[in-house]
Amino acid sequence: MISNFNIVFCVLCGLCASGFVPTVYSTYMLSIEALNWTDAKEACNEAGLELASVISNEERDNIEKFLVENNQKPVDKWSGYWLDGIRYPNGTFYWDTTGTEVGDGVENGFVLGEPSNAYQKEHCIELKWDDVNLGWNDYFCAEKKRYLCQNPRKEGPKSEGLDDYSFLDVRNPENLSDHFRDPFPRRIYFPRL
Image (cartoon, rainbow, N blue to C red):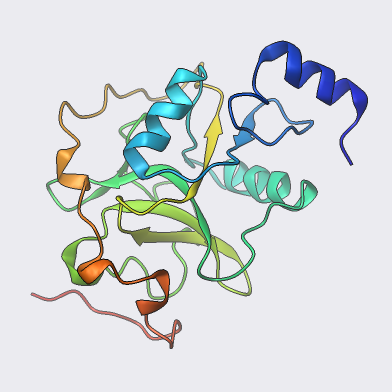
């Protein structure tokens, strides 16, 4: 339940009108609207925030607690929230705002069978629910999803990001819906050599 204080704080800060779910947390903000990854990154930046990155087990646990306590856990295995991770042109996933390789210092980050890089076009990371745990999945950056922002990091690694994100604007093949995914999500994929 949202307290009157949270609503007043939200209105005074202008965050409600900016499209975020009002919560008692000051670290994380969850969008109401769905945007593609680059627009989500921009929306967080315009609100003085950044897309959430996960560089420790504690941060992963805090995000899960935030989503559960605010009844905002993804509703099914096809839903998810954009996070700050992208596959850089060299093929490696990094948290764009920190420059830290995705998975460094975090146990059990990706859900089983991920990242799969379906059609070699899944370059952005979403936080999703696999019926058991929250975890990461690589997905098509041009798809619209809700997104999770956080306050900018005051300490720790920083990155200027990339100069050009246009390589992320690739749609899923033939504009198929989210349900083109593998109906057997526990299957393990091996990258092509």
